[in-house]
Amino acid sequence: MQRYEYRVVPAPRRGEKARGIKTTEDRFALALTSLMNQMGAEGWDYVRADALPCDERVGLTGTKTTFQNMLVFRRPVEEAEPARPPQMAPALPDPVAEAPAPLPPLRLGAAHAPAGPAPAIGPAKPELAAE
Image 1 (cartoon, rainbow, N blue to C red):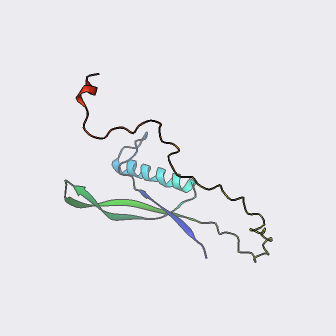
Image 2: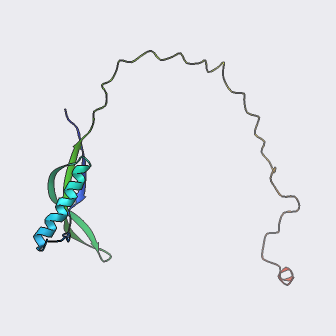
Image 3: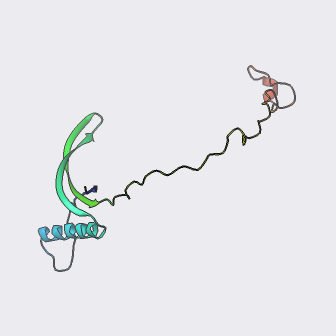
């Protein structure tokens, strides 16, 4: 069974200018041709075009629905190799024999406390502010 991956891109909204192309339809066709040739060079096959609804915000609480034209492409996904029968796993080392050395006990306390008296808690003293 063939599997595919898909890619959806917005359709061009305006045409491309080029020498000798005068009409809007021809410019739009050139823009679409360029996009499709670029996608085809990357291995994508064109599937279809869809116009999908999109809710957009208007103001603080309002919404409006617009339609976005999207182009759908797909390309085959390469299948992974078929599963092979499981092989015997190598013997695992004995976890008890190779256990790491235990960590030293954790000491709690004022190991990082600054030396000296604790600062006073309360309103600022006016005589200190003048210094």
